[in-house]
Amino acid sequence: MALNITNCPKCGRLMQKGLRQLCPTCHQEIEDQYEKCWQYLKHNRKCTLSELSRETGVSTALITRFIREGRISIADYGNLSYECELCGALIRESHLCEACRRKLIKDVQHLREDERRKSELAQKERGIGYLKDRI
View (cartoon, rainbow, N blue to C red):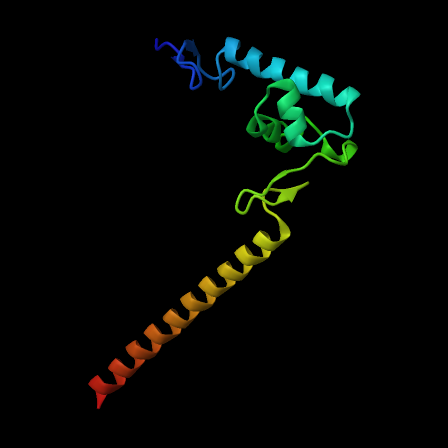
């Protein structure tokens, strides 16, 4: 019988595998930080992300994680926004701002078009080679 234990990725302590991604101590620390954010937001509805981080001592990355996980809904907080993962522009939804999203879509379309052209060229070259062999 194998033991289902691993090391906590945050602190390195031994923990049981499968229940959570962090050990109980680290998990509780994150829950405490979430509670700090929640309590501050209840009384300061117009705060910004940097103000929330500064006043609670919780990192902006962790607050952004709470937002993306849906634990903090920014719909109720008009000044609360976070950074686009590519350019750093302030956004209120998704992972990318509209400009980065459009650029990504355009880049993917160009890649598909390049692949299509390469495929067509390869087919033409195979076809030409076949005709030469037959003549």
